[in-house]
Image (cartoon, rainbow, N blue to C red; front, side):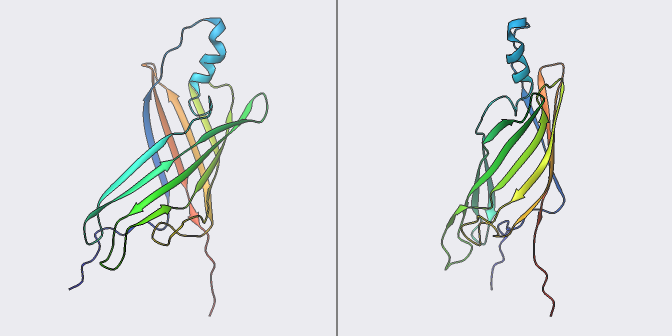
Length: 186
């Protein structure tokens, strides 16, 4: 009798929109005129400075041996000022994946999955509502077939951030990725 894996590794991006909602606490700056530039930078958390957030995802019960799959997302954010009023925010998702043994003859697979660069056009001077819109790409950079697919893709992506009166920020990130494939006629 052959065991079926309870969860196969993800090879294609999920169809449709992905939505991520994040809540974070904003540090309050003093309300002095000399701190106006620092206050503007603090109000726009993704455009204020270069940052390198790390996100780790662990999936349990993968494969017939019910092992854990691990995915570390390295997400550098780099703001690029276009003009006095506009900025492009580059956010590249670099996934480093470890997939457990899926059969008795296979070993553990680890390496890069598909890199996903995102570019957001956003206003520099933000109020309580901050937004960005742009493309997300899907690059064929997987180092193994079990870690991703080596096909091009992309789609639109948006984000908005709202500061609420209590000092918390609500961030909504939406993206829609499609993998480009070729059709063969027989």
